Length: 197
Image (tube, rainbow, N blue to C red; front, side, top):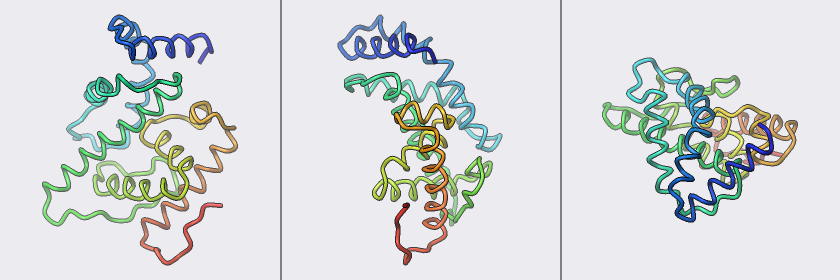
C-alpha cells in the first residue's frame, strides 16, 4: 500500500479520535475494501451455513470499532491490527455461542500444520485455537499477534510484517514456531517446556 495512503488513513484516524465525524465518513470507504478482503479470507474457513457472513462480520466489526474511537491510533497498521483482534473476538464469540447451544460441545484438538488452520464449520476448533492463542500471548506476544493477524485478520506474511514492523522472514519464522507451539498446546502436552525459541 502506498505510504501516502497509509499516512492519510493515520490522519483520518486521529481526526476521528478528536471527534471529527467527517473523518470517519472519509475513512470508512478507504478501509472497507481491505477489511472486506480480510473478512472474506477469514470467513472462507467457516462452514457455508455460518450465521455470520462476510458483510455481516464487517458490520459487526464497525459496531465494535465505534467503541474504540477514543484509542490513540498510532497509524494504519495499528488500526488493522486492532481490527484483526476484533474479528477474532467476534468469531470466537459466535463459536462459543454455537457451542453453548449444543449438548456435550467441548473443544477438541485441531492440527495446525497447514493453512487454513481450522477446518470448515468447526466452532469447537475455533474456541480451542482462541484458548491456545491466549496462552501463547502469555509466552510470546509477537508470535500470538502473528497468528491473530494471519488467522483472524487474514493478513498475508508481507502485510503482517508491515503491521509489526519486522521482516517477512521474522513473520514466517514466528508463524512456523507459533503453529508448532499451538499444536502442542492443543494436543494436551502440558508437561513440556513451553518455549518458542
